[in-house]
Length: 136
Image 1: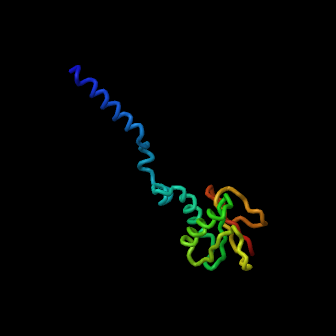
Image 2: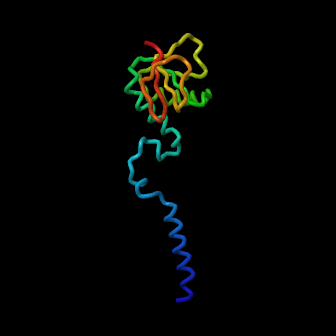
Image 3: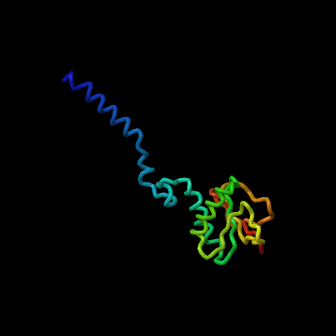
């Protein structure tokens, strides 16, 4: 019996350590907020949630500028790419850098908590970002 004590104790410690690394049962059975929560790109979750809410507030045919809170052109371009797929029937472009062809957006979608500098009217506020009406 003494010879089996050490391996059994080690096995019990390994099982206990593995059990501690498991997510809580509430997290296992909880419905996810969006499809990106359990993928390799969970950082896309806020983008998906904001655009899903914005799709009901932005009418088809509207011109939409999207901007990431960091204001980096690469992040805003990625956000615009996702937005063009999630907002079909709308003219979606990145807000940074600003378009040079005279194109003016009807709506501005900002990911994150940053507020736009221009005088705009809020349409939607959520923890993921905001949607603003830029023209009447």
